[in-house]
Amino acid sequence: MSRLRSSSLEIMEKGTEFLREQLHAAQKELKLKDEECVRLSQIRNQLEQELEELTASLFEEAHKMVREANVKQAVAEKQLNEAQGKMDVLQVEVSALKTLVLTSTPSSPNRQLHPQLLSPGSSRARPGGHIRNKSASGIIQIQTEPVTNSTREDREMDSVLFAEFLSWKESPALDRSSAFISRVYREDIGPCLSFTSAELSRAVQTSVENNSLTIEPIAISTCALSGLSRPCRHRIKLGDKENYYYISPSSRARITAVCNFFTYIRYIQQGLVRQDAEQMFWEMMRLRREMSLAKLGYFHTELN
Figure 1: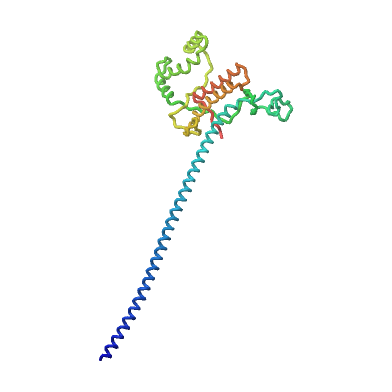
Figure 2: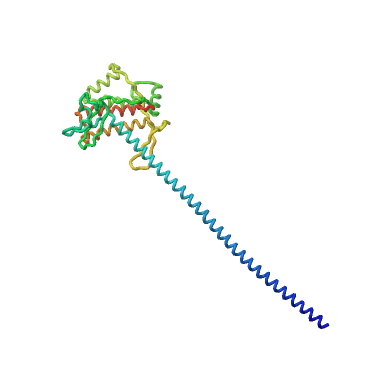
């Protein structure tokens, strides 16, 4: 009986020891798996972090490239606008110089630079046109030949002046009670008929008012300015300011007419015009006439 009990105890102890070993092995294996899970989790977290950093870097680089492209585009557009503005200014200057011939007065003029000095049979003689001389002693001579441009004459009326005209037309009269006739006397008739002899000026004006003076009629149109919707093909820039102002063809014509006048008087101031006083006077009168025509609404449009 005692032997059976001891045998049973021995078997139980062995079974218990076996189970302990199995449990220990299972715990060890579980620990290894836990460590592997932790390692894999760390790798996953590291990869996710690297992926986020890479994505953020790519987005930042893309935004940087977009910003740089926008900056370059803005700079290019600004340079283009400035270049177009300079081209407009140069076109104004060229227009002012179309009727001028640049020459020089050295002791022995270069005949290649002055075709008018070549013999009539020379193949290098080129009548018309103008040549620019870089000599500091250069002077300017007015070109007498007309310059032919492929342009047409356009006109558009001032909305304010046209409204005054319509109001006068409702009850036309020759007195100065209407705003339209009063404006004409103040801006046109008075200045045009103001001569050195005041008595003769009054007589001429009276003769005109009495319809006893015969003159040749001319086409007249009102001037164009703001307030009307017109296509703007040019713009201006004022000094070093960044703003550009778009102008209509008629406004550009008025501005260029004034610029041409100032260009000519600056040449006179610098001693670059070789003309006598009477020729200078009539050239200035011609430029004043161009300003008046531009103010009245006449301007040229280039034909393509």
